Structure formats: structure tokens, C-alpha cells
Length: 117
DNA sequence: CAAATGACGGGGT
DNA sequence: AACCCCGCCATTT
Image 1 (cartoon, protein in one colour):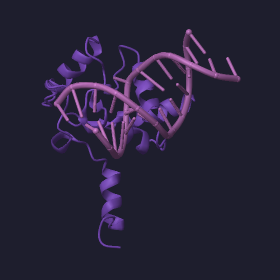
Image 2 (cartoon, rainbow, N blue to C red):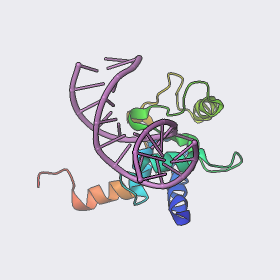
Image 3 (cartoon, helix red, strand yellow):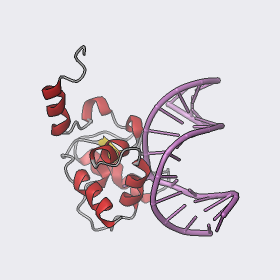
């Protein structure tokens, strides 16, 4: 289970500044489909000092997953704001700041996924 | 071992 | 948009 969280964190580290992605997407990209909750658990147990950009990971639809009143929630909103991402409403605009992994786009380009077929 | 508990996701109201 | 419900999964009660 140790290497699993490492796989997850390595993906989170790839999310660029000013971009956000979802728990499900991280899980998927880490080779752990359907394991969104696991991603959330790994991030929740992250050391306070960690340099991992956990604040760039949100729930489906761009919703900020942390509950009202949780210090980390405000922390996340501030950090995102600092990167030019507005989350003041408790949700971010994925259409605008959503991160599409390079590999994903490359695959789409190579296999033409989505074109008729 | 059953039930509850989440930094989840998707659908329906 | 705000909830509710249920499926999913690893941990903790």
C-alpha cells in the first residue's frame, strides 16, 4: 500500500500551478480506477509541511471537498486564489482551470478517440 | 465479524 | 443549487 500512495502523490505533483483536477482523475491517472476515495485519504494524511500541491485537487464538478469549518478548506481556497483560481464560492470552474494531462491529450491525438469510429 | 466513516462519484428530485 | 441515495473502497469502530 506504500507504493500506492507514492503513485498517487507523484501524479498530484504533476498538476501545474493555476490548474486543478479531481480525485477521480488522479486515481485514474495513477492506475487506480474507481479509487477516488483512496486519493482523498492519502491527501488527508499528508504532513502539514508537504510540498505536494494537494490544494489543486478538488471533487467532481470542481467542488471543494473539505467541509465548512475545516481550516484546511480555507487554506485551499487561499492557495488557489494565490494562483489565480477563484474558489470563493466553494467550487472552481473546471472548464477554465481544469487540468488535462499531456498524456491524455497525446493519446487522444494519436488514437483519435472521439472521432467517429 | 457487522456497522460506521470518510478530502469520492454519479444520478435523480 | 441543494439535497438525498446508493455504489465504491480502505480503515476504524
